[in-house]
Image (cartoon, rainbow, N blue to C red):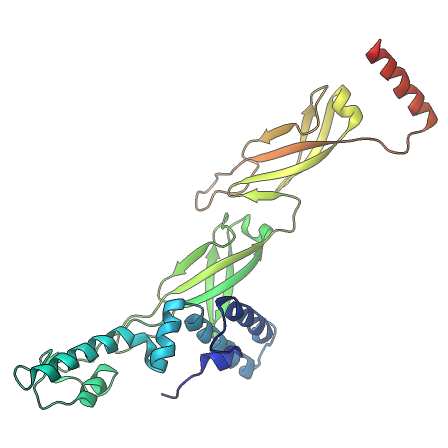
Length: 300
């Protein structure tokens, strides 16, 4: 197996910080994404390599193992264990060997069996099994995309995965898809796929978990005299009655007009509206006279 230089693939130095790696990955992933390079096998191959490199270098523990053991980084623990056993064996001489091995088997023979060569005599002819590498991916969506449950096809390392995205997914949330990672070794199980959601909000609503918040401009005359207004909710418009003498900053709660509760069908948070009273500008002379008369009435 040829050595793969993940640093070279992501075009970063070995001293690169976690932020440097994340920035490089995002830049290259966008450049070589299959959606932007349809029917381009080279771009598809490059995209797969970029994801594989990011799987390792974006994980501090995996990166440490890779820096020390290279292509065999996934078996670092077994490697360390076997070195300790070898040291015990050497210090103990020929008596008893270690781990079921006799004194006639040398160090390189042991590692050949450990990493997929001929089977060890002490293991009954079986090669060791290792779970496949876990994959990580980032899915960019808009807030409107996660208001309803929907299906989406993702391309991960050249493979299409049909994914159901539940309504109410939060920004930064991570979900696990079992068995969609790398192939296992020695008949071991596949790794898993971890998807991190990056949700952008281009609406007038502010989201806090299941609740939504919105500022609504309120006409001065309606605030004083009362009346009816129409406001936007995430799934349509509703009419609200405004009480006479409503003050600036007054908050109104619209029950069940917030965001869907994650994996709880039919349940929603609330929508909180804050009134921002608009002071009229460019008053006419007549309006100024009337406001002057009102001010006199209030002070008399």
